[in-house]
Image (cartoon, rainbow, N blue to C red; front, side, top):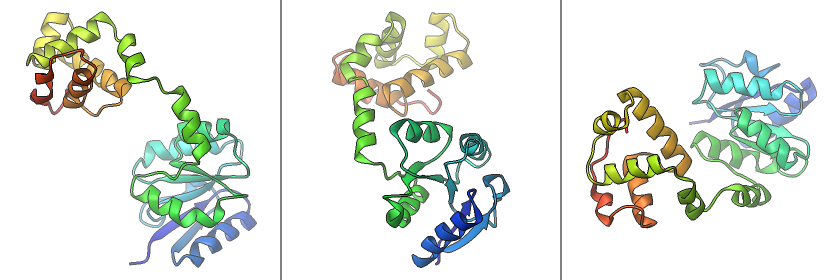
Length: 214
């Protein structure tokens, strides 16, 4: 089955060039004057966007909000680390250097469709320098957050945590979600495994029951 993608934004010449590049890889490609013209059913499984325009970040933000399942790959001429970060924060799945990486566009687009990202090594190294270590994350836990982890390791439910902490059940779920995101784990089980690995809770926490919402 031929993969179906789109190209949006930039000048007509830019769109023709990117469209031709993708078609050379055997893809079916549509072209849109702007990302806002993209629509389900005719736009395919991903869209390659010109990231050089001043309003590119705004367009990506709207697209990511309305179509979170459709990756948008921003193409920029010689993007800096700051530009890369700005466009990804806005909603781009990744950023491609138009001057150096355009020949790898097929790999980038297909990875994006699978929920992955092809990222330059310099960007990964920069990210690694800004991400705190597990020990630093542990040091930043509040006494209350640490008590939540220990209570869950003992088998307490989120409802029980809410009651003892003085929060509503909904607020408790929300705060735990934020904690999980900060720790880089998907759920309660991941948080307890993380805490156990650092010696913050007993080893038995790895076998604690998981919760759909917490």
